Structure formats: structure tokens, C-alpha cells
Length: 336
Ligand code: ACO
Image (tube, protein in one colour):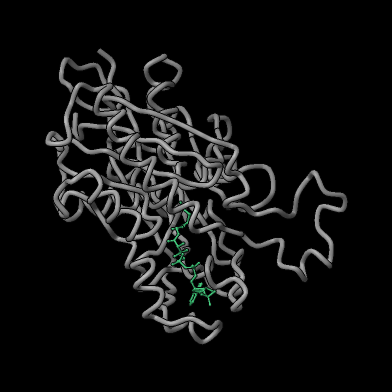
């Protein structure tokens, strides 16, 4: 039977570290407030002068993942790129990454599912592989948030949360009788909450797409109704975990590690308490990276593998909720 496995992982974050104390120099905030509300201690941002896009961060993580998989760029049948912060408005970063890899006809698909980008990307890769449309897929997830944040006190509720970074996985279809790879996935969305977390401008529905007045009002920056996001996350994430477990005929005790999107430490602690799973079964690294949105789960997986917290044979659930709203989970047995 055809199974979709993760052959290798890679991560890359830009070298510039921005601590909570650094943020306190630019806005009215404090290390204590940020740690208490989000768990974040520092994040990595691209250089202040810019010049580095999501596709550049993804390229560095891709080189590591390809090397570990023993693939060359020519082995890739399809690139799936997940981001909410594309290098430019269009074309999407999948094409930019493809070119940087020295390829000129490999298909490249961009998806815009924000924090749920890795989950949608992995479920899509699984569908391509099972249908026989592709067998070796590069799933690249990367974000450059720092150039789009209001780092004055006006934007402090959002700006303190986000970090830049990339996480990449090489996904492959294998023929096996073993119960490995993607065992179940569930995807959801509810556009009713689109305004709860969004960047409004520049927007094609506006003419002009952005004006000086809008820039002055800060409408080019993300706005977030933090309480709604929190409420929806702590409701949906346990539900979608139970849903994938039921689809796969497994129970909570069968899971070695939950790797949630690193949105906010408190959301993931609520999740752990609500499912009544041991604390060490839920992975956290938001302390060091902040919220890297689409990249957060593959970065976390890469670290969990490096730390030997999981390995071949481990059963894991990846799960996320993000802007859209979108949410979902993938249940997977690693190895194969
Ligand atoms: N530093 C200091 N004070 C701040 C900051 C800051 N960075 N941001 C907001 N405040 C102030 C507010 O102005 C407010 O002051 P006031 O009482 O004088 O009006 C006070 O702190 C409390 O603000 P709240 O918004 O009520 O703070 P809350 O406890 O809700 O925490 C937070 C805000 C952390 C955003 C919370 O709502 C939350 O965790 N939401 C979940 C959203 C989330 O995690 N998003 C991540 C990105 S989305 C995703 O990945 C799914």
C-alpha cells in the first residue's frame, strides 16, 4: 500500500536574535508581560535593512533537508510552499524557491493557510502521493514577519508574538505493508472569523490598494482579536485531535508526542490540560523562536528529532489553528 512518509527535515532561522528587552526599547512592553502571556523569551528576525524573503529562509532549510534525504533538487516532483508572508505580492514564493534551487519546470504550488499551512501542506502532499500525481514532494514553510509588524506601542499586542524562520520536510511515497506515514488527517476552516486575525492592506478590493491615510492608520499591519483566537484555539484543537485519532482507530495513549503550532505557550498548555495528557507529551519551543506561523511545526519536528524526543516508530499528532480561521491535524507514524 502507498504510504506518505517524512523522509527528512531541515530548519533555518536568521541569526539576528531579538529579545523581549530589545522590544521594550521600541514599545511600552516588558519581558515579564511577554513571558507571562505568551511564553516567548526571544525570536529571530531578518536584518533590519531587509533584503531577505521567505523563499531565502526556505532555501537554507531546504538545502539541509535535501542533504539529509539524499535528494538533489532534480528529484523533487512538486514544491508546496506555505506562508502568509510571501516575498512579493505575486508570484508566490514556491516559484522563487524553485528558481533558487536551479529548477525550471518542476511544479510549484503556494498555499495561504497561515498557521495551519504545514497541516494543509502535508495533507495535500499526502493526497498527491496517494493519487499517484507526485512521489517526492518538498514541503517548504517559511515566514518573514518582522518587516510587517508595527513595533510601536500601538502594535504591541501582535508585534511581540511573531518571529521569522523556515521549516522544510521532504515527503515521499513508499510501498509498504507497515502502518507508517500519514495515518489520518482532518482539515477545517470558518471564514466567519476572517476579521479576527488579518492584514487588511494592500488589498485588491481597495482602489487605490493602499493610501497614505491608511498607512498612517497602520492598516498595513496585522490586527488580532487575541481573545477570540484564544477561545477558538482551545475549543478546536482538542476536538480535531480526537477526530484524527478516531479516523485512525487510535487513542490518546498511543500518541508519543503532540507537536502543536507554536502560537502561544498558554494555548498549548490549555490544550494539554484539556486532553489530560502528560506535560512532556506536548512539545514547546516558542520560548526561543516566537510564533513562526507556517514554519513553527516543521521547525519543532526538526528539533524534536534532533533531541531524540521522537524517532522512527514514534506516533505523533501535528495540529494547528490560524487565521482564516483554519485549523486541522495530521496523525503520523514516523519512519518507513
Ligand atoms: N506589552 C504590555 N502590555 C500589553 C501588550 C504588550 N505587548 N499587549 C497588550 N498589552 C496590554 C493591553 O493594552 C491591555 O492593557 P489595558 O488593560 O490597559 O487595556 C492589557 O495588556 C491586557 O490586554 P489583553 O489583550 O486583554 O491581554 P490578554 O491577556 O488577552 O493577552 C494575548 C493578549 C497574549 C494576545 C492573548 O489574547 C492571547 O494569548 N491570545 C491568543 C492569540 C494568539 O496567541 N495569537 C498568536 C497568533 S495567531 C495564531 O498563531 C493562531
